[in-house]
Length: 304
Image (cartoon, rainbow, N blue to C red; front, top):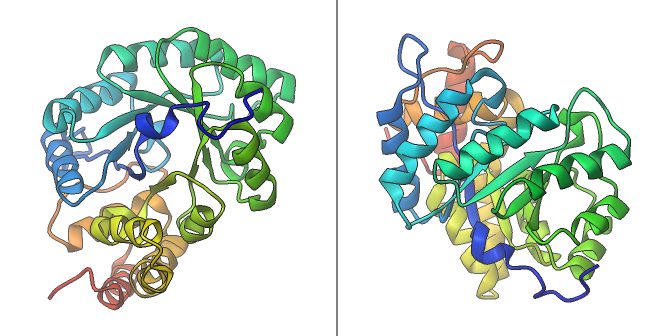
């Protein structure tokens, strides 16, 4: 087990201020690669240093392998080395995950995001074996994704400690929210730690997290960067102001709508068309759009 904070190189690999990017679709529901290029450029132009593709917000359950790889290749061509690209490759089938991980690396991913194996609810021994098998199949840095609310299982602290010994497992995206346990793991393992839940972005930084992987950053990328920079510069008053005044109204909207729905609808209101979500996720109705419009005006990210 690593014992030093600098034992891993996850920060250099994963950046600090990431957005879990939506997968754009056209009016017919097909993948819109050009819209993906435009969105990626927009986010990076506004300071985002890491894009996470084919994750939860990217609607990974309802996109094909071919679509995932096509978007990854297009975004890689668009942003080059201006941002790190992390590709979601985790499923509840280890063999499928290995194949997707290898294909994603070949398509240009700088790193991989591996969610806990959902629905199957394996033991912690199974969780460890699953992640280790995928990690050993690729020469790429890996970020574990701990999100028990969706996967049905948490990655136990002792399992994370064991996984930290695997050389290319370098980071954790934490949507579990157990800050007490994580504070100790950050200190013990040297893993780069990322907030996977926008309401906790600022608290996570106070515990030594490396940054965040955000959904509301679609609508407020510059504010997300400013929040991180203010904290790093020791300007806590400014960080709190950004969190309360700009990000919190968007977080409230996300709680009502869900991640992909919020992100796509907010972008549309800002004039960036990325289509609607695929079923079973649905677009907001007229009342919900009006509520979102109000929240975005409160946040200062919608000018009409």
